[in-house]
Length: 520
Image 1: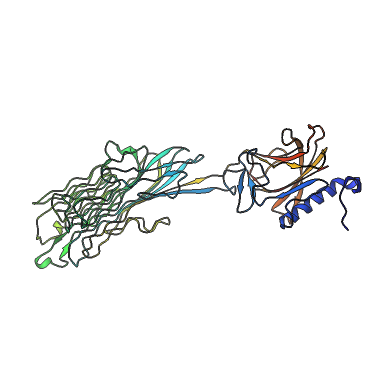
Image 2: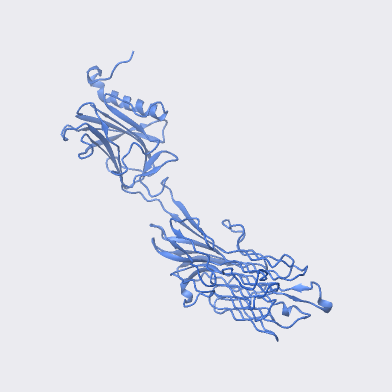
């Protein structure tokens, strides 16, 4: 037999206890999805499955976690620290809320990316992989004309929220210029140019650097002009461009060679070596370091350009030569010693650019250079496949892989001042008293009626009366959701039949899983 619950048939000595039990029963039925709104004497139960029961316009900072169905007064969805990340390619970004992608700068136009530090962040971690140089191109079975692998650099930067930085991502060097005389591949403002760039020659571009700068950086053609060294925060050097020449006589194995120097490290590798040095090695250019660009390769038939701040040096004016990789200071461009030549001094490989992490606000900085065609930093846990590797396939003139920049930050959890207000519920009569049940879960350790304040209105939310909350134990067991109960006399409020509940949360983080409101 079903009996309507009214004031008349409830034992007045046990009325409060019975009302609480009925509210709890209604909530448990709601949790089991048997009921979402439960009429008591007059009342509602809202076990959160979505945000439909709350008034978003009236609430503030009421972050709702849709995966676990609760409200939380925190800047993070679970009340714990949150790792934020933004990854940059030459023309895309993984996190558009904090970042703007570049438009893949070419020699004449384009823009670099930008990153804005989220509010509340005091440091960011920067990871950069420089681009690889292009491979030399000749009809030769040798695998010794490869583009230099790009380097790797990282560091932790002390900063403040809302600060913006410029992100430069170098593009892989154009390999061998086999597509025609007009280079169209952007180098992120930091690679050299083989000149001339004739079809079917061994000439190859150096790879662009990758890095983060403290201010807006204009996308000038090739070279980042007008900027000083403190502008750079972290840089990963690009690999040099591969060259080409042939051995004769007793040194004719392999017949073709011209490997470029890899980028990265505090000093980039010289062309056709795994040696960190700024001086040239015959026609092979030197690598950049922390104070100067790599020396251009020399030779009787042409001398390559010296590497510059942020930019690789141009190759000598002829074919079969590699230009320097970009970097903090770029590698030099290769020269021409004359061919045929019986020694490796005329390999014509471009020098690798240097990395950098010595900005005064950087801590935990380090760098890793590439090794010949292999890029540096490829074993990093956050390495992105298809990044900063050079190639040495026989005679293919293959482009080097692009660079990449990753910025991460740890956002600490902070309790926020939050207000959650229900939608109005129409009562069947003008209520004079009301009881509220709150199903709450601790993240921190709140103080009832200070950090969690419950109040009730009968006039649609114009007037609220506080209900003094008490802890009535856990829903189940000895942990998890707590049952908070409170009662308020609302007879002094302006007369009305539009009921609302309100929760004000502050100081300590909690999760609110549901609310039951009863009135009579």
